[in-house]
Length: 90
View 1: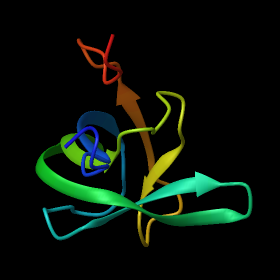
View 2: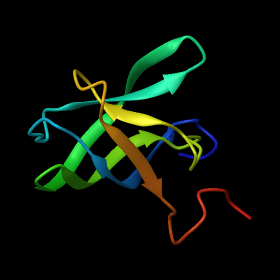
View 3: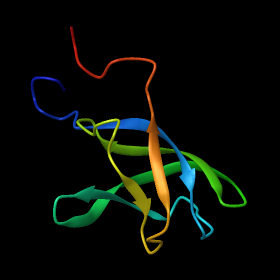
View 4: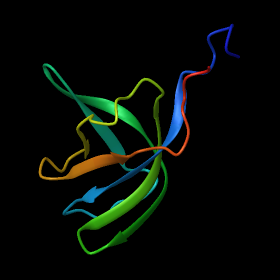
């Protein structure tokens, strides 16, 4: 897959807050210079009140400092928890 260009996504762990109930159908958005766009898919999620912890598939070049949010909830904030392994081959 590496040399064919097929592996462009990776599994990330996200945590944050939101005012809406989320599930695996909920869309994620990522901040760009000119606004937000669709950013990934939720695989699993746990929500307790406003706090959420979820796994999501994002582009594998997503920076750990990327600003993410739940679509349709402009007040939501999600941050990437650093992965315990590297996505870059040595």
